[in-house]
Each structure stands twice: as C-alpha cells, then as structure tokens.
Length: 96
Image (cartoon, rainbow, N blue to C red):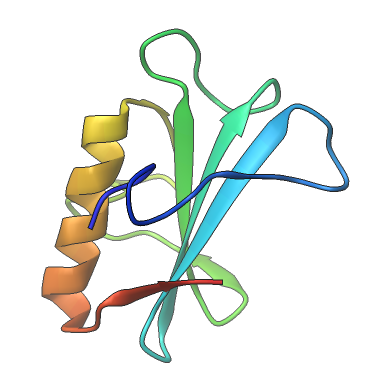
C-alpha cells in the first residue's frame, strides 16, 4: 500500500499544478493527500494530509496529532499513515 505505486496523485481540475490522492477506508474514513503549489509542504516533504469521517475533519492520535491538516510530510511518512489507517480500520484503502 504505497503512494505513487498502488495509488496515484491526480492533478486537480480546479487547481493547476496541485495534485490529490483520495483514499477511502471502508465506510467511515477518507484520507486526502495533497501536493503541489498550495500544499502545506515543500522540497523533500511536499505532502499534506487530512482525515475525514463523513464530511468532517477528524484528529487521530498518531496520524494527524492535534491538527486537522498535517503538512511537511515525505512520501515515506504518507505511506506510514496509509498503513496506520489500514491497521486502525481493518479496511484496505480504495482510491476514489
């Protein structure tokens, strides 16, 4: 379960040069991964993530910490978060 291997960053139609990967974990959680010029990150740590339960942001200890949006993440950090959400939900992620 790896970003840029099994899951692709797709250019957002409403924001040129911004990319998103949206993963659904069962019926309860979605993980949004963003990179690009408006993402909260740069250089070696270009990714930001947010976790949603329904349409609301959620804070998850060990994943988002005390924040709704967590930035400055590397691809390895994002892959670890995908694995943690899989372990937490027991559901394989499906890209939306």
